[in-house]
Length: 407
Image (cartoon, rainbow, N blue to C red):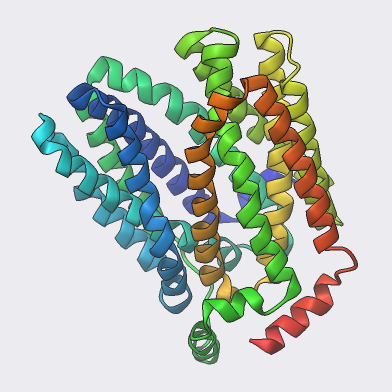
């Protein structure tokens, strides 16, 4: 079985995939145009920092609620509704003209981000509901293609679009992408579920998130991973830009190439899914260690092109790790609780990401970019060892059986 074979067979997932691509690219357009608009209107770095804080905030308290809604109500209805409600939110940005209109920017950004916080766990939990269990590894590989494509196409064309057609065109196109995404999702058909299963699902959904986290040593380990990994991810995302701008003095072009390399690595990782048969958890930890090794090599890169190649290797290892870990989590967690789990995961990972990105600037005042790359690489290696110890001698089948019985 290959990614292409699974793609052809999973017709409903195809719609979810295209909705994700369209949605993601549109969001990238708005992100680029919004930053340009805010800088033009205010010329203030503080205003941009406040924008990032506002965009992060909904994930802290809305994502867990969005996840629980996905467990109790129709995932399809939630996804379509959120897409449609985000259309007027993004179109409000067309009325921003002067500093007095900043409240529109921040309100719109908050509403769009609130939609993302509800949308993300609902979409993630929709995948195992649509796809057969033995095909999850391939679908999660295809997801890496989607993320890579959005990163490459959205980031590069978003800047070009805003430059030639203006920020307003980007906002209007994003509104259209939300409508197209809603159309694709509305055509999805979820497998029928019996009334008895729905009743059990509603009963299960009443269980507290705290009990979900503490219900198994495996769940605790998952959440420790979701808490710690973004601490390194946030800083290395900032470092990618710094390498293009400062270390190799390539300007905006260098940043664009660096982000393109990130996307290429993710896409390449998807083509190795057919080789991932067993020991997915062990493979995930091994590739986290390889990702850390890549950052150590990046700190030694002698040229810009060597750095680009290393970034591809880093995200290739990260993509393989993501494929393995996402598949393990989707298979371990009962479907009736996946929305809640992924909502909590979004909350925890975004909290860690916000802390990481917030401290990155301070760390760059203390350490040179290459030194910070080395530190981040060592952090990945330490995390890999910690995860290996957490999962040592864990029997996933036995743990899953006891976990389901416990909830």
